[in-house]
Length: 306
Ligand SMILES: Nc1ncnc2c1ncn2[C@@H]1O[C@H](COP(=O)(O)OP(=O)(O)OP(=O)(O)O)[C@@H](O)[C@H]1O
Image (cartoon, rainbow, N blue to C red; front, top):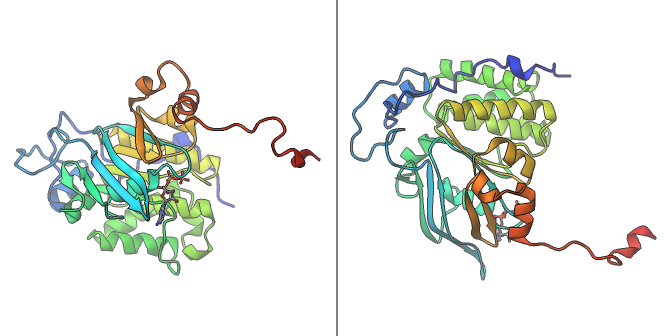
């Protein structure tokens, strides 16, 4: 059984850099990225087309993003802005279009129309540069099943162009913090649902991205690991990173997020700071009032109690 480590004693992850100072860091070339992510970012003059904390670009911007499956428009001209440095929650009923929107935002699913920008870079016109800046945990992540957890991280790091020594160092830290160290020699195909989430999160964090896009990151994760992941994500945002994640757990969104958007039937029905969206109520109350929904009437499903 994995030992239970205290969240307070989580080691400082080297994939999370120390906080930036007054936007003096530019993240553009892989070299800049490397320096920035190791906390040695230099003050660099901003140049045209570059991105960095001092630039005007949002971490993620969706403009009139659209997707139709068959005859159904499941994402209907969505506009959304995830401010740099924000912890952004995306909520909505089942089938609202959250996963489809996030998949289009990160270059996994081609939109029918609209635009997705990552730090000002068009995710579809300039995918190589845009993808350097993001770490993604997709829904139902398919992974090379016949690799061990450690091998998967090694494979991911080398694909990302990282040096093997650095990959090994970060992989060791991530496996330990996510309580996967004892399973690092286990094939991914033998991982439980929660373990798959955690190794998926580790691959998303490995190259120390500036924006994390996570589809239900804590779903099926045990409470101890969930507490560690929350701390990791909070530190990530505290050090200048940005996080957008989808969830059905309103309490989690309220606990972590400073911004939230509610999506229903492929449209954004509310978006802004958590306080603005809640409008003086709990997020759950606000969600239900925005999205509606049906509560079974007395007499419906009566056979259940027979
Ligand atoms: N590949 C696909 N082909 C056809 N329809 C799809 C496909 N992917 C998603 N859909 C449909 O698009 C709609 C939005 O699905 P999506 O997975 O984006 O919703 P979601 O908000 O993430 O839902 P959940 O909270 O249940 O995960 C749903 O009606 C779904 O059935």
